[in-house]
Amino acid sequence: GAVVSQHPSRVICKSGTSVKIECRSLDFQATTMFWYRQFPKKSLMLMATSNEGSKATYEQGVEKDKFLINHASLTLSTLTVTSAHPEDSSFYICSARRQGVDYGYTFGSGTRLTVV
Amino acid sequence: AQKVTQAQTEISVVEKEDVTLDCVYETRDTTYYLFWYKQPPSGELVFLIRRNSFDEQNEISGRYSWNFQKSTSSFNFTITASQVVDSAVYFCALRENNFNKFYFGSGTKLNVKP
Image: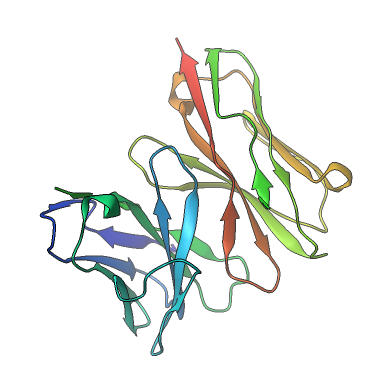
């Protein structure tokens, strides 16, 4: 149980276009999901916390207009990288918190974004 | 300040050697959670272990063992008789009680050579 699916696993897009990444909790409901970014050979940094039915909470330094987060249902959160630039190339990984389970955090398999 | 420090950037060992990955954390919370994750080249984070701050009992799971010492704020991870399949980046992480946020260390890349 507690599987989080992330799609796509890899995406290449042209500079200036937008790309959407999906994070789905497959067998549980997640009122809260998290989006992390990992730079090459670096740690994972929390970008934002996504709450179902409300606006996401962004970490300091993260552009909310560039990284649009939508959490429209209890099983789906999306991250849209708008007007992507090569510097947005990174590994993005989501995490979902299982309701009612204190330490029930499950990570997705990640999305490798390359902007050319 | 870094909440989680993994001082070892990269470690190389030969198969069957034991290896210890260090993790030092910093928090003012009395209740917190510590984690180790494995990230193979494919990128996904594989959960290895979670420890609560009030449970300092060390744990062994097969070839893996963890040494949690609150006195030194350390949560070290040892792989016994390493195997090539253990090659990956290992992350130590901290979650404080009142927050959902995970603080990750910078990771230690383990190379196990045959």
